[in-house]
Length: 115
Length: 248
Image 1 (tube, each protein chain N blue to C red):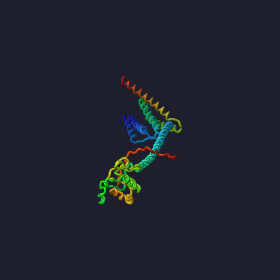
Image 2 (image 1 turned 180 degrees about the horizontal axis):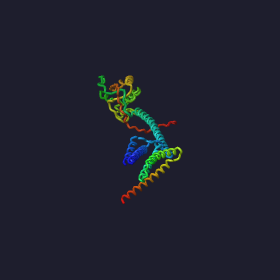
Image 3 (image 1 turned 180 degrees about the vertical axis):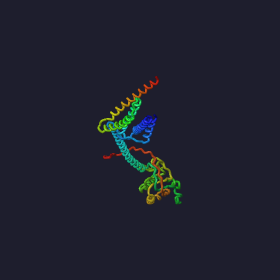
Image 4 (image 1 turned 90 degrees about the vertical axis):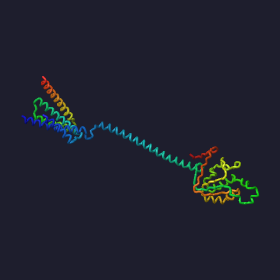
């Protein structure tokens, strides 16, 4: 259960140690990819709590979402369409949705446990 | 089942590691952004406006300092003219005898001759009268005139500096120069070419002349002779400069 957390910490450490820096004009793509990744993770947690978790869906969701979000935003930049805004809105809404669902599930479980 | 769950955890760990790397990179780049131009046109325009304003101010500063520099320069040249004026004033004061001067010259001392040599004189009006016969203003005027005529630049009699308006006259028994009384022994200092002055004195027969008055003139060359300034307060009363046309 703790392995994902350890993975997160290791990833953070590696990222800081590698000292990569993304140029400012590409940082928005990275942020969108990051947002998509977070959304996928929360979606995974939600599906785990709803007991509909599927590793394949989760993995494909993670990679596809991040890559497509970044890629679409990039293409949108070329076309003059601010697609990254759409991605941010979509992922943001989904993220908060997922969070709300997770909160409700956790709360109802806690209340159930109390009773 | 257990293996499957472990596999899932592993995958989750890898994914969270990827997320961690992304987070770290994002944090890094947003905390210390690589500087590229990302400001909007409007922002750039206002910045440009500000810089132009600054530029204008700096230009104004430059022109101000240039002006100041110019002023200093002109005042500097004024200073120069002031120094020229000072020099001229100094020269005039020296010529007018208002400052102490020194240089080559001679000192004449008019002293009593040791003893009247001719015994014949003894029978006449004796020593007192002859002795009382002092040199008068005329003798001194004559002497001074000789000295001036032979290029003496400054003359003083008993430290009384002679100037252009100096008068030597008898007042009663004593000689006054201007309004100051001088008493024998007379010491005359003159700045000038010593040889010229001495030979002029000889030529004019000064010694013989003074011998008649039972005096002796001791002449002495000096390499460094100090002549005091004229201390008389002088008032300009009856003369005004005539302004000529074209004079500024």
